[in-house]
Image (tube, rainbow, N blue to C red; front, side):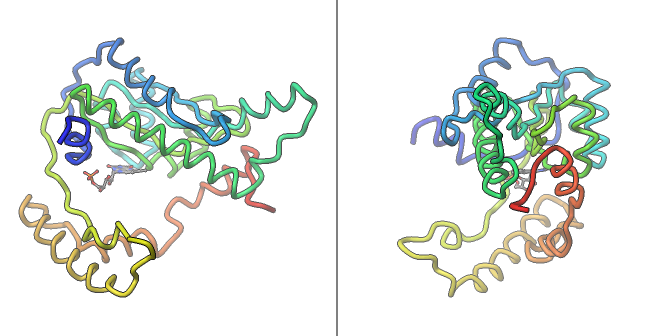
Length: 246
Ligand SMILES: Cc1cc2nc3c(=O)[nH]c(=O)nc-3n(C[C@H](O)[C@H](O)[C@H](O)COP(=O)(O)O)c2cc1C
C-alpha cells in the first residue's frame, strides 16, 4: 500500500500536544493543501482563519466548551463557509446574491468546508503532525464571529487543532464496513445487527484503553442526537445573512 493510503487508514484524532512551534513553511504547505482543493462551481466559498495568538486560542478553547487542546497547541485553523467573496463578485455586476438564503447554499458551503478540513488534516498528518477536528466552536458561533471579525454571509462551521503529538491516540474502531460501503443500493436490512455488533466492539475498545466512562455507540449518539445540541447555529447563521429557503 502506498504511504498516502497507509496514512489515511491510520487516522486518529489526537488531544495531547507538545506545544512545540510548527515551522512556518510546513504550516504554509498544510494550508495550501486546503487552498488548492476543489470547490462547487469554482465558487471558492471557503476561507481559513489561522489563529496562533495564545490569548485568542484560549478564548476559542472556552467557546468550544472547555477543550484544553485548543489552547495548548500552537495553531488553530477555523474553516469558514464564506459567501462574502462571492457576494462581492455579484455586486461587481449589480446582481443580488441569494444562494446563502437557501439550504442548498449552506450545504454547498459545508461540503466545500469539509473538503478543506479533510485536506488540512491529511496534509498535517503527512507532515508528521497530529490533528483534532473541532465542531465545538458551533456551541457559540456568535463569539467566534466576533473573535475572528467575520463579515456578513460567512459562518465558522468547524476548525482543526494542529500540532506535534505528545501522546498518540489509539485507532478507534468504526461501525462494520458493510454499514458504510453499500454496493449498488443501500443495504438497510442488516443495520440493527451492525449496530449491536458495534456497541459491543466500542464498549470493549473503551475498556481496553481504561475509559470506564465510554458509552456504547448507540447510547453515546443518543446523548447528542436527542436534542438540537448546538441550537445557536440557525439563529446566528440567519443573523449572518443565511436563510433556509424561508
Ligand atoms: C466535524 C468534526 C467535528 C468534531 N468536533 C470535535 C470537538 O469539538 N472536540 C473533539 O475533541 N473532537 C471532535 N471531533 C473528533 C471526533 O470526536 C472523532 O473524529 C471521532 O470520535 C472518531 O475518532 P477518531 O477521529 O480518533 O478516529 C470532531 C470530528 C469532526 C469530523
